[in-house]
Amino acid sequence: WFQKALKSIPDGDKRLMTIEKLARAIDRQGDSKKALEVLLTGHPDKYSSLFANGKWRATKAWVHVGLREFESAKKEIVEAINAFESGCGWSDDIADCWNTRAAIAKGQGRREEVEIYIKKGLAVAEAGGAYYQMSRLINNLGIHVAGKGQFQDALKLVQKAKQISERR
Image 1 (cartoon, helix red, strand yellow):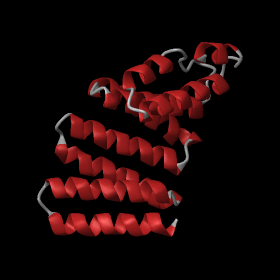
Image 2: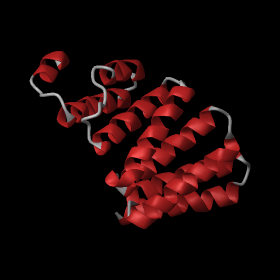
Image 3: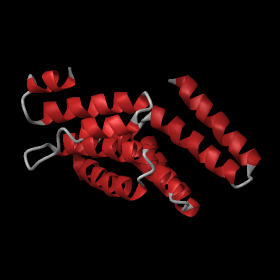
Image 4: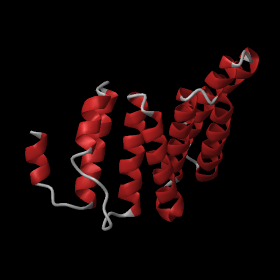
């Protein structure tokens, strides 16, 4: 059914964004392999907007994280960040990319980088009023801090994240 649906959508950004949304939905159901197959049915090209390119690459990076393919994820997320930071992305998108970058660093065992990337994402989220991403990043920072044995600091961060998410 997916292939039939894609045939009815003309090439371009709309098609790329449809593929991206479907891949995210499939990945959320726990099938990263199938999500990647869906993503590979369309690629950004020279006519793709930076926004569509960034969304597609950010989703592909997250799917690669799910597959534990961290080098591929890193390549895609760097491209997504570049696309969004060129002026086409919203703070929510950019902060989400930094969160993915932190997940990649964690997966690669580079724990010292995790906090750096979370804080970059948090700065973007705070500047843009992206409250969902703020609460998510603060929560992830709490989890990271707890992993270093700093449980009191972790508790404060998780409580702060909860307060932000309840405000919205």
